Length: 261
Ligand SMILES: Cc1cc2nc3c(=O)[nH]c(=O)nc-3n(C[C@H](O)[C@H](O)[C@H](O)COP(=O)(O)OP(=O)(O)OC[C@H]3O[C@@H](n4cnc5c(N)ncnc54)[C@H](O)[C@@H]3O)c2cc1C
Image (cartoon, rainbow, N blue to C red; front, top):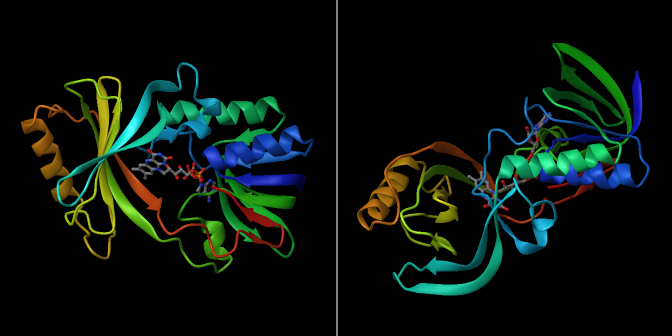
């Protein structure tokens, strides 16, 4: 049986960073992700505040700078705030972090899914190339996202999330700020327009208990911005997913398992 210091589950920014730090500190690290290609498909609006920019300052990750955020309040009033950051190519961002982990000596496996866990024995089962492989770890980092299977297996409460839908659309005029709408039309959540050069990510996140239909409100917002001349009608990419909105987990560790992300 393969035996190592640290098994990292998930190669998003959380898992990639944890794998890199641990490998740089001298641990024997294996990081696995069920995705075929790290970072894809992108499930992100691709804005990061400046402090997160260590892996995002250069081509091809960095797409444009952001100066601030315009919040459109339920009254319709606009509020400008200082919220500088970067728009990134999120897939390249995740890959840059993973490459840095590899450079520090971490072993990375893609198309490799955690399928079972025996925490008392510190044994994880990974399905790779159609075969199950048992791995003994000294510690495990669960960086497997907002719907963490590790958390479910440990009996931890699910994270509060909004569900999202997002289109990438042409931007008719350059935009240096992110725009966020807070409105009764988006119960428990918000809508956004984040510029990335000559296109923008237009999306919304809602509390699924309050409003299960995302398509209707997003199509309405898209139509309104087309009529205002801000964006074009073509949709070059569609995505979605869950965004945690309720703060950290009740517990961030359980025995030899640490949650990251
Ligand atoms: C539409 C949308 C827009 C967003 N916009 C922004 C934004 O503009 N800025 C921002 O900062 N955040 C944004 N977020 C949130 C952001 O994407 C997440 O917070 C971030 O991805 C979390 O990173 P992570 O490393 O914790 O997890 P993730 O990036 O979710 O990575 C988890 C990884 O674990 C892998 N995995 C899961 N289960 C297993 C398993 N059993 N075995 C192996 N691998 C597994 C997955 O394949 C995945 O690669 C957005 C989210 C969505 C959905």
